[in-house]
Length: 307
Image 1 (cartoon, rainbow, N blue to C red):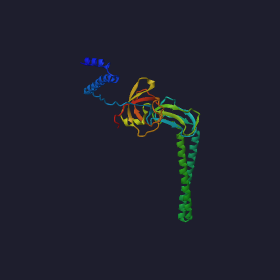
Image 2 (image 1 turned 135 degrees about the vertical axis):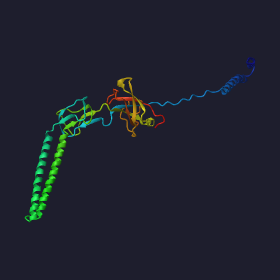
Image 3 (image 1 turned 180 degrees about the vertical axis):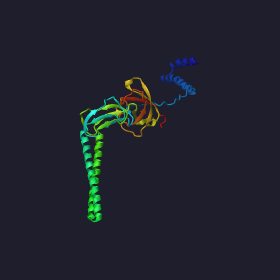
Image 4 (image 1 turned 120 degrees about the vertical axis):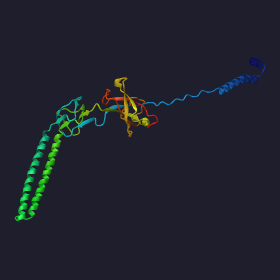
């Protein structure tokens, strides 16, 4: 029937005006389109697949640092000339080992002078104490007026005060002399040395740096926008460019409450530099060959849904 209709339309088209002929061409096209739409509406549509969202890992850069109390910078406690340095960089030391000595000639002289002054004050005090006892005896017998007792008692008190002052000066001189010998405050390794024998240094000048290289951790700068996805105990993957494809497992051990400015310049140019960061503290195995101060990359498993 469709063929017959098509033939009729073709035959008729040549005998009809142009406007009516065009209309006859459009009618079959519209009919076909309408049929296709109707067919598609009646056909069941596939349901969209539902997949659970995958939280992207948190990536950051950081450095290997010593834990608090595991790295100490020793500074000059006084003005003086270094007489000897007993350690070199890389040397292991134990707590109490003598590391450096200042020339103590001047401080020994000060201590000797303080002791001499203290001894002199002690002799004067004993003499004033004897005078006081004698004067009281004579005043009791009427040989001396009572006011004479007040005078010797005052002299005795002055001698007592001078003895105290001399003793304090001796203690101060002894303490200063003690500072001329610098000892190791912790077990560790000398990682920095800024002075040599015969150098004269000012108080507060850096001398030596000691660190316990078996008590290190990582401080990573994480964008503040990731705070809601950070959690204590989260797994961390640590890598370093110096060791190629090697990686080590770590753990988030501290999430600070303070947001601060970025201290490391990001190696990734796409990472923003003007956002605040939290300094995430991460522990890692001691057997990892990472060095103090080395730059590392960390990949942190996020806490889905926040804390």
